[in-house]
Length: 267
Image 1 (cartoon, one colour):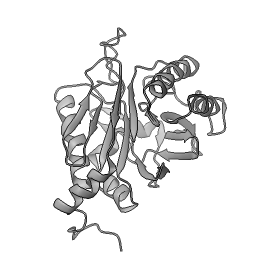
Image 2 (cartoon, rainbow, N blue to C red):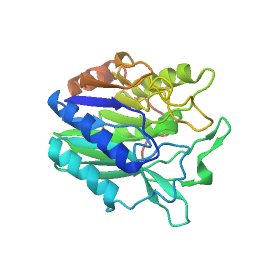
Image 3 (cartoon, rainbow, N blue to C red):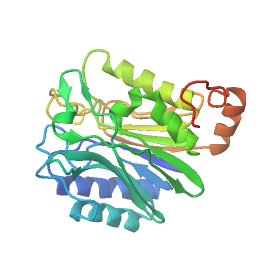
C-alpha cells in the first residue's frame, strides 16, 4: 500500500487549513497514494482557543474533509476538535474516504513539560482501527506514543500499520525522544508506523515555537523492525512511501514479542 505523510504547519483558521489539506491530498493522489495522513491539530493549531472552533463530526469542517477525500479518491486522516459534553473538546482523528469512516479520540492527554492539555481537552477511551484494501490500520495521536500498550492493542485487533498524527512540543531532547519513541512503538508492536508531525513553525517561515506544542517536523515511516525507511526534516514536506504488509508477518515470525507476552495480554 502506498501512503503519504503530509508534514504541514497549520494556523488558527480552519478554512485556510482545509484549503491546505486539499492541495496536499491532490499531490498525494497524483503520487499514487491510497491514504494521506495529516498531523494532529490539522483543523487549528495549538495555542488557539479551541472550544469556539470545535465542530461535531457532521459539521462543516468534517464535511469539507470528506469532500476532499472523495475528490482525490483516497482516504484522508486528519486531526480536528469536536465538542465534549463537559464543555471541553475532544482531540479527534477523522479517517474518511471511499469505504472508510472512523474517528478516534485521543486517549492520553499531554499533561507534561508544563502543558496541560486536559484543561481544555477531554480524553477518549476507545481503541480504533479501520480497514483499507484489506489492511487493518490503527489510530493514535501524539502523546499516545509514550504508551506502548495502545500500539500493542492495535496489533491485537489485527492491525499491521499504526498512524500517529502529532503536534510535538519543542524543547531540549524532544526531537531525540520523538525519534526513539516512534521507532520503539513500531518495534515492540511489530507494526509499520507512520508518524506525521506538524512542521516546525520556524522552519516553515512562521513564528518561533511557543509553550504550546506546535510541532518540530521529522515525520517518518518506520518498518515493523523499528528501522526508519523514510524521514522528513523540520520543514514542510510530503513523504510518499510503500508499506509491505508481508514484512509484518516475516518480522513477527522472527521476533515473536506479541506471542511471547506474559503481562498485559488479552484474555
